[in-house]
Image 1: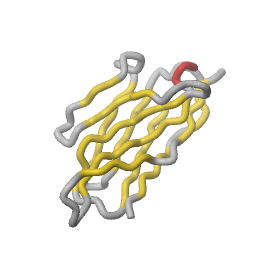
Image 2: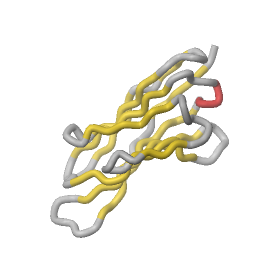
Image 3: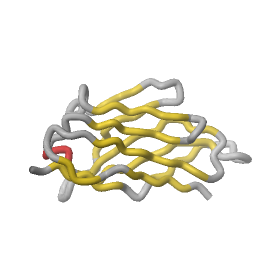
Image 4: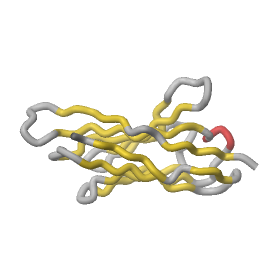
Length: 121
């Protein structure tokens, strides 16, 4: 059984910073591409950042220069450092993992339950 748990969300003022963490556990042989997504109230879910197992990264235009995604394969952790946060960054943030399980020939994906980020004065 694979579990994905996000943490680190909260309330911050504009210009502040937060570091989100995504912890994976269970039957995981190897992590492949991983990413962070967000969904604001009344809006569709959008991609924030992705990182491959070779550390190639990709960011949404709205967060380039402010957010940094990273990973620790030994700990099966994925992080999102968010700097200079703005009100438009307010949303529920979700971690998505693509991975291969022991004794399975193909890869699969799992979503976390999300962590809330609110940016307000």
